[in-house]
Image (cartoon, rainbow, N blue to C red; front, side):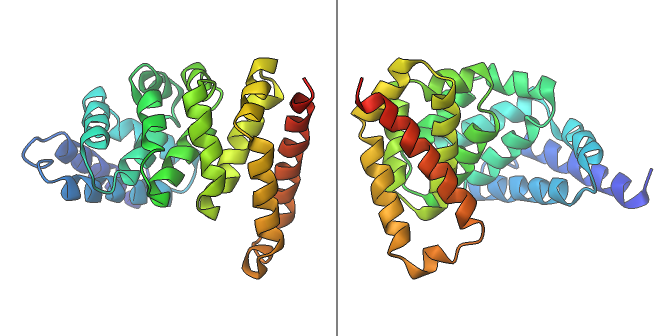
Length: 229
């Protein structure tokens, strides 16, 4: 085993134990910093195999519960905890453990937080785990759809995630889902978003904008199919 890799695993193990220590996690800022530290170590691992081993060193149901409690009760930087839970989902058995908790509902509840950094972490989690049944169930609840559609009027860093989630949901979803989106005036919000991009010099220069616009237009045209129902 590579010496640096072995050292990283030891550090991951020590940090995970600290996060489960009630004395260590009394300070939410400290827990956020520990989560960020773990995420930073995991992202620097050389490949998927090493990252999976790293996640296995870190994961425990106790730590998962600590993170969910932190997300629910903290006003701090919970995006680091959300990202760490996303890393857990990198391993299929841990993903099942995450989905068996209240995590899917908690994530959608966090979309109400008016912080683009936290909203981005949540939307990334929803998007990456979309095909897990608990996430699909949450997406199709009208109150959650309403939150997602509202974010099309939010910060530009959120748009891609929202449109991708809505596209995944509507492409193979029931007709009722498309009708609900139309009731929420998604086509009107998409058109406003497209006009906003067209009139902004800075947005026009965004890397990969062409692909983004293709996705936005695809969702817009698909939603139009339901307006005549």
